[in-house]
Image (cartoon, rainbow, N blue to C red; front, side):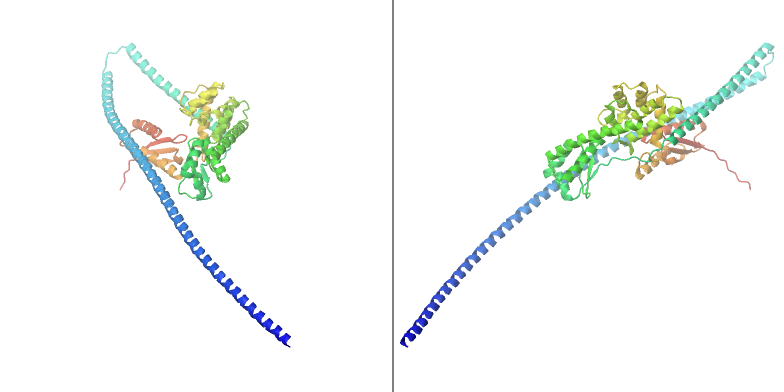
Length: 517
């Protein structure tokens, strides 16, 4: 019994000791946990303060960067405004000089009008005097007596001779007029037949000089840091890149159409690739230039094959390809040259000439336009000098030099090329023209005609191919009408630019109206 009690007591004492030990251990764990929590809290507070300071510093740096960027943008806008102001000042000076020139021309015209009026007055006086002299001589002859038969016969024969000369002159004039009418009718038939046998599309392609940009971020990459990329691109391609507020669009500007096309293709490749930096720009531009050289040769060969002229010199073929990117009043010059070649062949064949030579003259007549951006002078002279290096025939050289009538024609093919060139340039739809420019051209035509004294009304008709001028019959007589029409045509030639030719028709009519009551 005592043994059992001792065991129970020992068990109870052990349990009390174990409880004390566990309580002591638990209190130590709780105390350590509280200490750890305090340390973590202090560390979190310190880390939060540190991050707050870092965020404040980053926001200040961002604000400084935005301020610097805004100042740069303002400086750029100020520079653009200064440049715009300078250009406007130059234009204003140019307009002032033009106004002074026009005023001087107007004074000269007034002086010429005064001189013509005085000359007309003198001519009227002389005609009156001559009429009186003739009347006096006629009266003397009527009162003459004692004339011998020989003298009377001689006077009669002389009068008959004069009348015969006059009749012969009238017959010759009628014959010439009849021959001219037949020649006009024959030439008209040949031209109509040539136009009917050759059918081409109404409008030609126009070289595009814009590049689509997917986003404004890509515009910034095209510009590069401080404009580094865009300067490298302009230097490598020789074009001007215009980037404005227009969304998704970049304009490439250059007078040379081939360089403009190289720049456009290169910029499209750079935008698709996404890697835009000076070294990549030079690589892409060099690759595109090589591709463009191959493309020009391909286009030139296709044109030569289409014109069926296999013996064209190799250096001429790339220039024909360049004409494929050249436009004149919206008309593709290469397609225009092919049109002229076929029209010239048809007309030459109808006239019994060499159709193949005429086709060659037509294809090469505008070859100078492929080089007029790089060589000084007009395209007829440039083309003629270039073709002479390859021993082209006299017909081809004269057609290239004289197809605008600047020099006399030495072969019959040059007038044919002139006619075919006018047909291709002036047929409806051949040359593209905006509505505003078309209306302004018609208004300018009418305004030029109305500037002359004696003109009452002027109407531009036939899409600007003809201007009809109605004059005051009391101020303008039949003798002045022809000169006035020539003066109006001359002033149109000097002051306006237009394709083809403009016909000036002057109408003078005198109406007398009375009423029977």
